[in-house]
Image 1 (cartoon, rainbow, N blue to C red):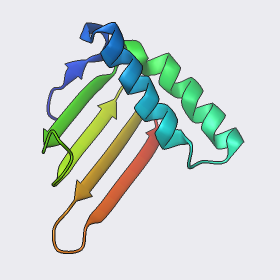
Image 2 (image 1 turned 135 degrees about the horizontal axis):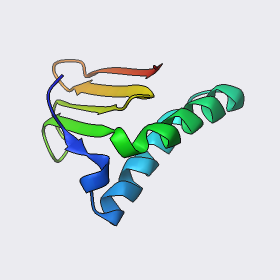
Image 3 (image 1 turned 90 degrees about the horizontal axis):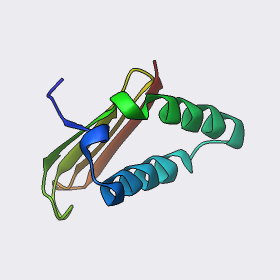
Length: 92
């Protein structure tokens, strides 16, 4: 995987945004699954890296990945002809 920005090197406001993204992503899971995933995320934050590729304004295609020793989260938005979205959460 491409190297990313280390969570530990982010500013406090950037760290808060990362936590908001993780929380929003988990909102699609049932409570028990969400709680397990959020705990895994908390355990892995200090060695997590954030990777972004694509349009910074999120108006066109973009990709983000958060990866640590505990989890991988990916989101891809391809705004081509039809607009396609892909997301995944994996507990490691």
